[in-house]
Length: 239
Ligand code: GLP
Image (cartoon, rainbow, N blue to C red; front, side, top):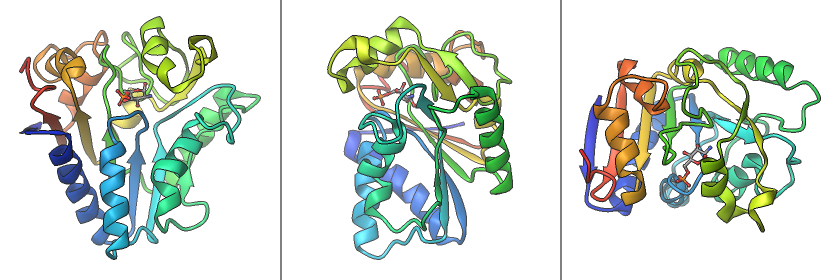
């Protein structure tokens, strides 16, 4: 695991964008995209580079997770968020950005379909990840199996509170989600975990220096052979 401490969020965004750009320029690629506020700077940087010629026409993308019960068109569905913050501003081919259907009548079948479509694309080359204050990645909350696959999960109250800022009221945060599992995420060839701000310092320290344990889902990254952790000084404070 390579841990890179950078002075500020802009430096994290530029370094993450460098890694993604390098892979995208090498030929057809499969990107794993995360939502949340942490990767937004990286997406802004990639959009800027697209304006200067970086093309995503040969790339595909898979989202990590989705809220259950939100229509795709809801502004806070992760499919809407990714389109608004990134994919809609670059030149992905039509249908190249894949998400989970949070309104699927059969969530288990939807999860199986998603796993199959990641496999059919050849797996994920670079997976971007944020980290929750409780150490979750995707929506794999503490005590998720380290071998878990894409499935439906119930959010913890802490995550619902953390994400309430995106909704008009805390009650509107969905209780259930579909998320790639930790086992699914660990199959990506390169994992890129970003941590910004002091609120993430404890989770980052537990993930990279604590034991590999289900109580901190991001600690599963220690089992992967190619992980880059990019943190700003505040998020590195407890390392
Ligand atoms: C959500 C997302 C995660 C994200 C986390 C942290 O729960 N499902 O993928 O990493 O929030 O969000 P933020 O980056 O806004 O702190």
